[in-house]
Amino acid sequence: MDFKLENKKALVSGSSQGIGFAIAEALVKEGVNVIINGSNTDRVDKAVDKLKKVAPGIRISGAVADLSTAEGVQQLVENAPAVDILVNNVGFYTAKEFEEITDAEWDRIMDLNFMSGVRLSRAFLPGMRTHGWGRIVFISSESGVRIPREMIHYGVSKAHRSRLLAASPRRLPARRLRSTACWSVRRGRRGWKRLLARW
Image (cartoon, rainbow, N blue to C red; front, side, top):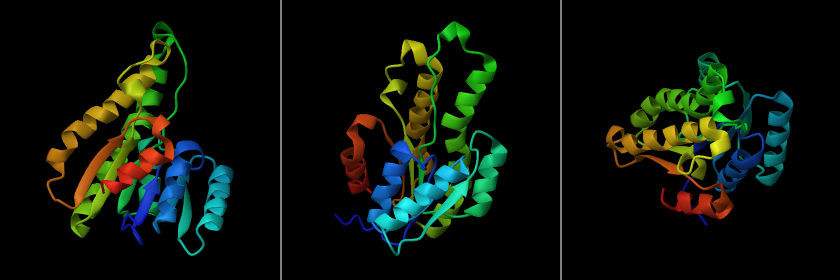
């Protein structure tokens, strides 16, 4: 299916493996030039090589950066100053009882799962406005709605993503600028294709 995205440029955070890689793969098959991001150089390089075999001729590059810090986000933005599509996917979780979660662990999960998307969106949105076209996607989770007892900090970080998106349409008045969230991982590639179809 042709979603009219050929030659657009996308950044998918946390895309060297897992859901992020599957999203990047779907995009390159639509002719999108994709930037693969991760914090491990070896995994990023392997993901780039794999995608180049999937879609010869599409520009696929890697950007190694730790997005849990403002400095890491800035490093990534400097290497990729403009994109048409931003997919805020990066995140992690740990299972831990609420009473045992330290302040440092709360800070770490919020910085990576939530603030990375805030910082990246803030950096790329002006360029999207200038070019008159842009898409910002947050990959959320059902855990943000039904917060697991053993992963409260993870669920709260995902709930923050959804609430940010609830306010974003008022910040993106132009018809060719859109932001959205994809909730359920269980939707897999079919869910991602339905999301693309709304673009």
